[in-house]
Amino acid sequence: MVPPPKRAISLRVDKDVLEWFRARGPRYQTHMNAVLRAYVSRVEER
Image 1 (spheres, rainbow, N blue to C red):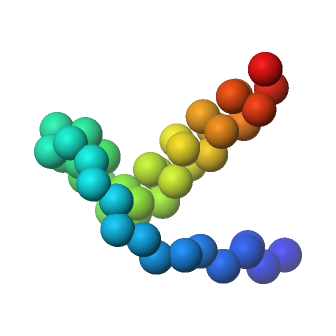
Image 2 (spheres, rainbow, N blue to C red):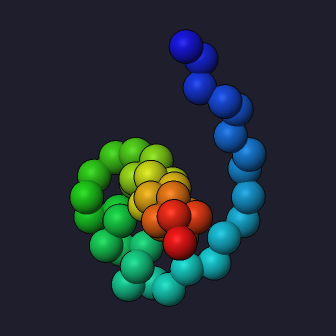
Image 3 (cartoon, rainbow, N blue to C red):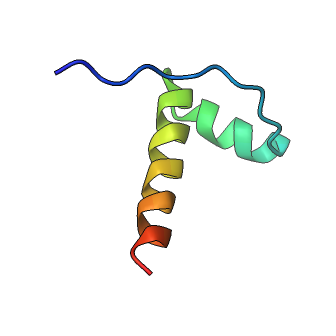
């Protein structure tokens, strides 16, 4: 199955937040997306 295409955006985040994600290694943007997706799923459950 082919994943849906992603959209490039500009997003401002606090420096410490960006550093935390970058410190976890490559593909930090993919990790950020996964965290946001989990949050959206959790909020939709309410």
